[in-house]
Length: 466
Image (cartoon, rainbow, N blue to C red; front, side, top):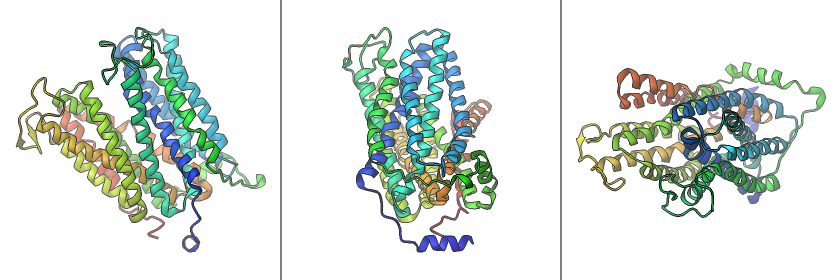
């Protein structure tokens, strides 16, 4: 029965892609959402909260960690259920619109995170952060599920890769605006570019840092307008008499995963290599700062370079995805990730490639002026170049493997696989580092997740290969 269905699917002419303005508008979702991840979650608001809003940095880090964990649990539990609830029950845009309203509102609440805030304000800010994180991921589940309705399977790779590239570009531009023109260093009163801020904000009240949330909210609301105007929403509605409860449908899908061997293996593999990839980005800058004594300037340049390489990697990976297949792009990218990760670990203050001696970085020297830093940066750029294709190709492969009538709930399971074990890689890094007393060995433990994901991807059989 399965072979007959697949054969019929392969014999059916590919549908025409949606109009160009619809594709551009769908790609703009990644552009719209990325500033939340770049500005709030990574570079600006999270460090501000930890160091200025909470009573102490240690207390702030603990609070932020608990909130992030709560958001992860909410995403892991909610994404599959919401996907099952949406499939076959009408258009997806109303769901996306609802999540978008909550996302924008919760981001705006971050403005109230004043320095040294009282406990009730901190609780409000953390609740807003949890809601924003969950809404951003829920929205992504539904927008990803629309991909197969916009382009034929042979173009899914380019669509996904372009989305990732545009998202990286949006994150970079928003970071340049906020860090380079608005947010100031409390010690100097100047921005990252060494300029006076373009807005007359109260620096004592850290209004520049607090503006990060409302800025990300406005950015999202503005650039999502084309999505709601031009992206077609081809609803497939199951007749009410034949519709089962969402939990029953979700349980049926989960229970049937062992019979869908390729999907099951892919979701487990993705769970593992996504954990490893996240850990590389979380600890890569920390390792570089420890080896070379990097400050904010070097880390800022490092982040910009990785983001730019990610843009090109996503574009190139999207083209290769449609030509050679998502699975090959994922596997080659994972191999190159391992090369880049071990290349980074081969660098210490006096050596590169583990054994080649180099002159150590001189105190007070210009950023990336030593041989060790340049070698470190080269391997890091390799990681940045292939990290985006791994993520974009994973999204495209899920869209190719999932049944059309259960696309949203499978993307919910996709989100679940990215969150349910997200703590494992950082935990292993911490345990190995503490047990060995070596940052290098702790970082090396990340390879376990990449290798396990690579091995599980080997037997995955894609629809095209079938």
